[in-house]
Length: 108
Image (cartoon, rainbow, N blue to C red; front, side, top):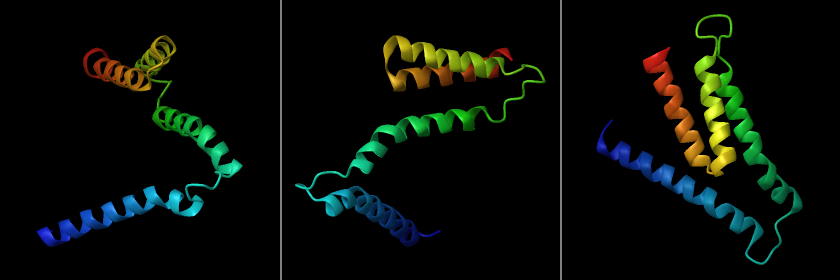
């Protein structure tokens, strides 16, 4: 891969990202009201995506062999507990990931 190819790839990615960011403003304009379905999707999709990520992360957990999903359960408990306590998504996901990785690498 030469420099020209890399520069063109980055330029195309930047252009597509910019177009996707500006597209809602071009479609709906500044003075038009956002349609109800778009507002509804903006409210429910973040929770649906988080649920999908939880399912994806836990899909390969084997409950029939050692460690029986214990590190995953502890990691999930840390995420849930910290989120209920601090209400900080970044903190809870980060701490849960660190706890899970420490358990997998050092304990189990």
